[in-house]
Image 1 (cartoon, rainbow, N blue to C red):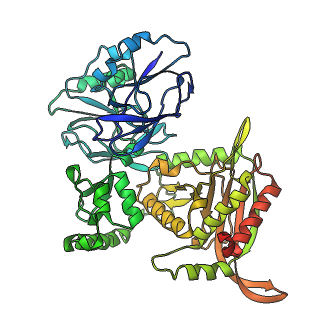
Image 2 (tube, rainbow, N blue to C red; image 1 turned 120 degrees about the horizontal axis):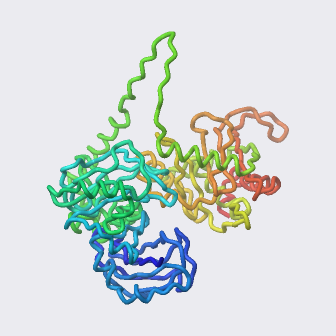
Length: 551
């Protein structure tokens, strides 16, 4: 059956959108997850992803044209299917927009002609909120914390809950105003994507019938009432929220945040001129450090001081273990832990791993790092130097930068290096896009930023996707050598050990030197032993003589 795709609401202030580019044309086959078009909103140009499969039968808004939210954007269905009835009633999606709101990236919900006539209708102003799809691989989510309770007033932009996905714990924002009438998934519980999460509407509205029908009939009332909220990409596109010292929040557009980050400006220092005090591009461009008020400076200092006690917060009390008795404790697996177990087991048992180990001298690298770090406002770690060396070596050995598919091997000619970061609940791998084009200082700043936000659970799924190679470093824990499991779909992962001072032979003499062990885990389906060895030789050359990375 053909499915109508409407112009999505990609930000909380968006009323219309412009199709910048169509990436598919009428007649093209569409798979779930394909990017249909790039849509320009009032804040950014964003990719619009299909959550349906079929053939693109109709384009309702040509490239370059602007249309209101919920206008007919496209129709996807079976090849050759008659859509004349849908085109004749083309105004229907816009008229039914209050019942179905399209949320970007998380889940672009669409309507079909038949469900639009569902018998069950919602009371006026009532909106059903479903479990969003917050990452491309998410099939279920766990409600970590509800930040609102039944009966609380909810404003547009309020954070309803924190939802744990397979990649991160993310804040979930409301795109509706009203009262929280019903909570469908309690804290700590897990439910599939599209399950009834909550109901928002006017205070005092009886929604018992809605919740009962939804849980009993599932999709029966969903097409007429369902609304999907706040995908991570949408959250980034609508507003970036920063914690402040007084517990409040700073609203900033993603472009403003990026410019502020590039200029090293703290958003705490900037006064927003946009709606509800939102910081916009012009606020950052017009900001000068001299304009910082004493109050803002004090707030920044207080925030930094307040962060220290939190970091030094005492650990939870240890469980009492009776002497001489068998005692066990059961800890429920988090969603992240389940996915780590699933993915690593799949990788280890489907990809034939082998490991290549090489020892590199770090004497010149240590001298180079010390010199680089004398430059003001520059801080480069040994791991940053390894990442840069990997990026350059991958350009020379593209077969390492590959992935396996049943019918072909994909060679990536772009270099996106994932950096493994340990977090409280497990492991995440934020990605440095186009790493080969970054300087050492840019790599260092990006890794610190991504690692810091990963530990604070502030990374978006799009920042953990698209890696072509991975680096894992346990040297800071004193581990001299280890082997990692490949982070698929990558074909290789580099394990970096600690720098060890020990006797080495140089020019026939035994002298004190500094060495580091590197272990490369390879997928034998895509990388032969000689290919992996050649990559390590190039990597060794770059690390042992850092000046060659400038050539």
